[in-house]
Image (cartoon, rainbow, N blue to C red; front, side, top):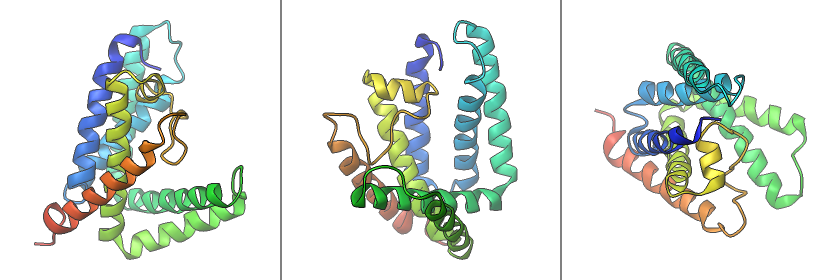
Length: 199
């Protein structure tokens, strides 16, 4: 978790990265992969450092972020397959949360992740557009909530990756899934009609 003075800048980076992803994710896919690779790498690396060591935390987060960004950019096709796998896992979790309480069976998650990867490779353009639009929409919401002072979102923005999920918002924030879906659909429409159009 980043020290408190760095949480607002991290939130603003999330909003900016989310806007790029949501509205121009297909055109800037390698940049979007680098941004999300950086965020993921920084979160994973900084979670291994003591929160009291500010300089060590920042250097570790930067190093992990650069490693994550390079990994996803160089693994372009792996990145597309991972996006598909992530979408497949998300579909299982969202569907299961409306059918039953608790987590879905692991085999269902694995099967849908594999199916998502295969579909993503076959329909790359559309999967990239939808995934970047909805991923960017969620990143915008988390970053905006964190910048506005929401404690849960601030924890997510500062590398506590298990805090916020699109379909299980904090109490009193039932509007979040609706905003996420609406913003994701707008981002998808913008990319299909303008920024992601084939030349």
